Image 1 (cartoon, rainbow, N blue to C red):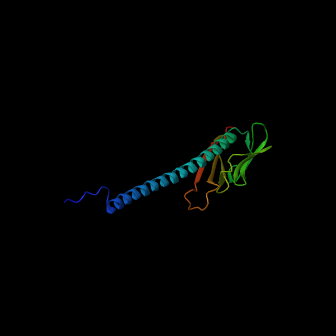
Image 2 (cartoon, rainbow, N blue to C red):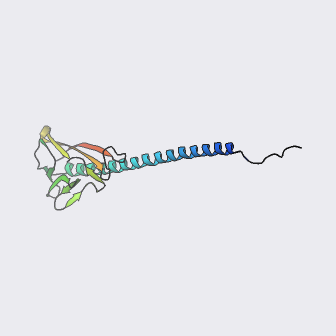
Image 3 (cartoon, helix red, strand yellow):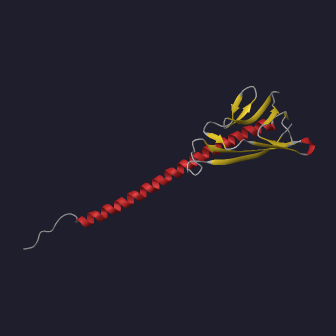
Length: 166
């Protein structure tokens, strides 16, 4: 008599297949987590970059179209005052961790998402024919960043140079 043939898998075969499936799932989840972390970091960097570039564009526009710079020039300071097109005195400075433009009212050029690392710096130079050249620099980081070594902290530096038209 012949032995009947067993249908199914042995315990060893099931263990090998289960182990391989677990290894593949762990690798896939590690890749997914890495993707999610890097995507979050990219989004944070992009928000900070957009906010800093917006503030720079607004500062450039205000200073380039000012009637007169009333702050000390030449010199470097943490704020800058000028007479705007409406004849009002406007000051750009740090206010509660944000960049603010103050004249008859306060307009914030950065939002609550970011915070200034240090006060903005305005360096004014006199050029030929008494033209004024102003260098603006500041650094922003995301407000909810936590510790400096955290992967969800983004610090970016912004700077530009502006030749005042008037």
